[in-house]
Image 1: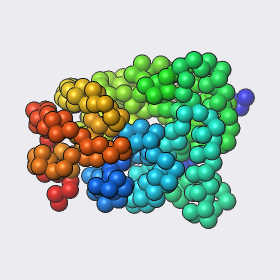
Image 2 (image 1 turned 135 degrees about the vertical axis):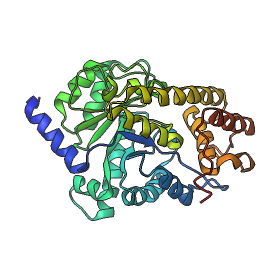
Image 3 (image 1 turned 60 degrees about the vertical axis):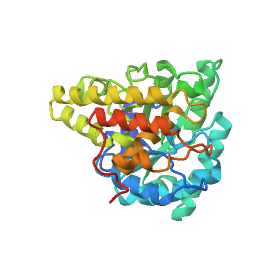
Length: 350
């Protein structure tokens, strides 16, 4: 066990070396766009990041919203090859998603990606390779399995943290079928100074209430935006939201209003966002293919990219090769317009 004062100092030193300008308040699990042949669309990624610049300070690549569970190793490497230099040029930090169902697969992917980054930058020092890449760390979930005990979950994560790589833990029971318990998180945080960040998408917020004060906490669950940040009286330091792909501007404005001490203004933005997001996610949820988070956010991003003319543009392609249905897009456009969230001009129209 590392003495608490020493652990806090070591954690802070690692954070400062990877994020010298501080951790962003708004992170985005970036969508992965595909062209008509199913290849990752580099130009669309560039234009998307340009649209997020100034509002989003950090990216998760690939996260669940960006098909992180579906991409194979070659696709993930292609995606990172495209995104890392684009993000670095735009001042965006990157967390690399290592989304695998079991500890052995996570170990292998983590080691392989870290070795690739070291080769890419000719560095024997893994932290230096991360710094040169603009990478703040790696994001891991608990291994899959509803029957896993906390001892099994904690043991698997303990082994991954023992690699020394900077880690953000991702609470995602919708996929893993389980949750990291607060006691498990406290034990891991007390042993590993390289555990830096926690993302919780459960909606239950139990990890944020675990009392681990020197971890950076981001909320991934949608809704109630204005009441969850510490600046608004909540538990979280920031957001890592799928909707930051298309709704980054109002989310960034909400955060700014909270930090400026204007909770009423933030609550007004929050209510408008929550209403629109709930409707669109409700429409996307029944689709028999794709990830509901991805499907909803690709529908929103379609209108951010093409503006009011989006209905006349071919629907976005999913990783499976399916395209979003025209009815979902039509109703998404109507909802965005009704809530004052439809842009006059899309980011691909410049």
